[in-house]
Length: 454
Image 1 (spheres, rainbow, N blue to C red):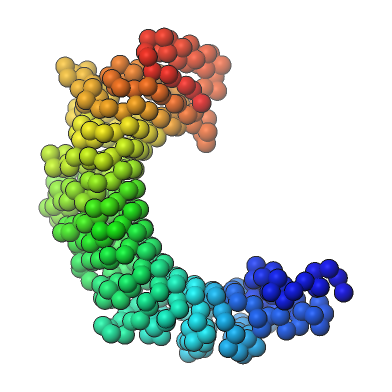
Image 2 (image 1 turned 135 degrees about the vertical axis):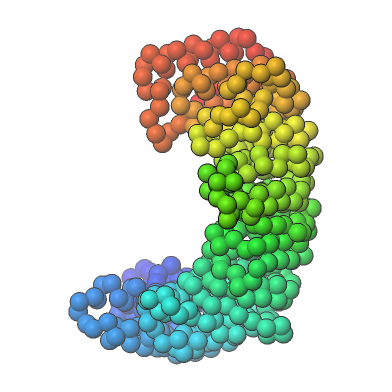
């Protein structure tokens, strides 16, 4: 017997858990020692593509699909009632939905802890797999991931998931989301990606939730958050029409990436059927940020900065904010930057990814784009000590901005400048690189701040 085969069953099963279930099943051909081990493997990874792609052209597709379903039936029958920790099911073909229901019911009855489902049974995309109610009735399930355009519907009293801590929903249609959340008393992490809401307004309410990630391209009309224990919040999506409730009083880290159609954001009156809706949405964004006012670390995308320029007068004071990171580009403006910096009275670290931005006559005094009497006023009241500039390209415009920061940030002690690594920059030209280095040396001499090009 070889050394591996002489290992204890528990260790061999652990090794098999790193393979797809089909690969693990093939190990039974090695020797008698491996023949029945699959019956005790607590991790099953079922993927119909493992069956389809290697064998395409050799057999008819219906025959391959039937072979796949029979394989899953045999595996589950082989395992009997043995405990199972994780069941991952990926079906992208016309598998019998009743068979899928049976597989899910089997592992739930055996006390599965982690259930990962990616199911697309209709190749035309017209019909969606309706998740069976049993998926929401388990005393052991800790993690549930649903993906693939699955239809999700439930009624009050039909959900029993007292141990569920992590829920991920991707590309699914959802009804009555509040009913689900109210039935998850232990939920700590919620991720929602491209969810199609079958309701105008959505209320995400959970007293236990600590981490919330949303990628929402199918924007609902109103969006509320009653999540007093939330620590981490990442929101990517179009601006909702309203944010009636935003309760995130213990929030520590937030990343806000608002999506927008640039021309409509800047000139909504040009789109007569859309102008009032745009104005209403952007004017209500302050409600979202009011709920974020206790955050310690905050990241804002270029689109978010552009949207905030429409509601500067309502910008809250971020009294706990220590670290602010913004990303900028030539298509988005900095009109909101002066107010933002003035409303961060305890800011210590400022990170700017990309100094170049869209210049307008309302650009503000945070930059050096336009000559003005109140030049640098918002910077002089900002207590930031560390400034990180990322994506530096070695242009004179950037150097002018850097000097502007050195002059007007009164508490600045350290400035770290990171060169752009993904695209060619001006610094590849020896003469430019030499000039930039000389200017950096001069900046260090003129300022008490330590400037480093990294």
